Image 1 (cartoon, chains in turn yellow, brown):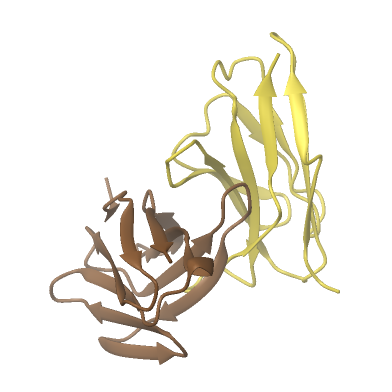
Image 2: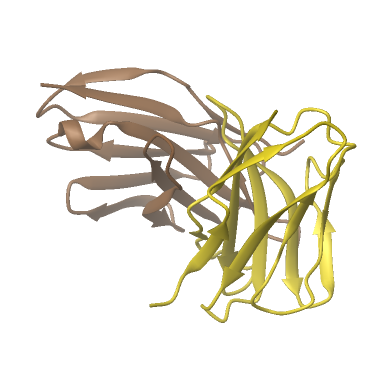
Amino acid sequence: DGGITQSPKYLFRKEGQNVTLSCEQNLNHDAMYWYRQDPGQGLRLIYYSQIVNDFQKGDIAEGYSVSREKKESFPLTVTSAQKNPTAFYLCASSPGLANEKLFFGSGTQLSVL
Amino acid sequence: QKEVEQNSGPLSVPEGAIASLNCTYSDRGSQSFFWYRQYSGKSPELIMSIYSNGDKEDGRFTAQLNKASQYVSLLIRDSQPSDSATYLCAVNIGGGSYIPTFGRGTSLIVHP
C-alpha cells in the first residue's frame, strides 16, 4: 500500500544533541513538507521541497535543517540551536504544489530529556 | 502575514445536532480550501476540499465557501460522538507557491 512512513514514533533529545526524524513516501509525489504542531495549535510550516535537491524555508525554519537527495525521502534534523523542540512533527506530501490536498505520515513526538 | 483564523473552541453540541465550524482567511488570492479532522495524537485526515463559491456536500458533511467575504465553513449534520476531534482549516495561499497554511483548529465535542 502507498503511503508516508515517519519514524520513530517517539524521540527523546538530550540538551546539545542533534536528532533526525525520518520521512519516506512511496506515492511518487514531487512535493514534501514538514510541519510542527504544539498543543492546542495548528500546523506551522518548517520546510518544504518541490523537487529533488531543492527545498525552501517555511515560517519557522530556524534551528532545523533538511535534505532531499531522493524523491522518496525528506529527513528533518532538529539541531541544538532549536531551544524549544518539544512538539509533534508531521511530514506530508502532495503530487505537486498546486491546489492539492496533503497526505500525512503518522507523526513523531519529540521530547527533551 | 497571510493568515487563517479559526475559533479554538471547544464547540460542544449534542448528539444528532448540526455542528458549524468557521474559518476566515486573509489572502484574496487563495484558490483552494480544505478541512482536515485530527484525533488526539494522530495525524490529520482530509474531510472535504472546496475550490468554488457555494456549497459542496459529501454525506453528513457540507463545506461552504464565500470568497467575497473570505470565509469557509464546515457543517456536520447528525453529529456523532465519533465526530469529536479537532477540525483544521487549511488554505492554499497563492502567490505562485500555493503552500498550505493551517488555522489553529477548532475542538468539537459531541456529547450523548
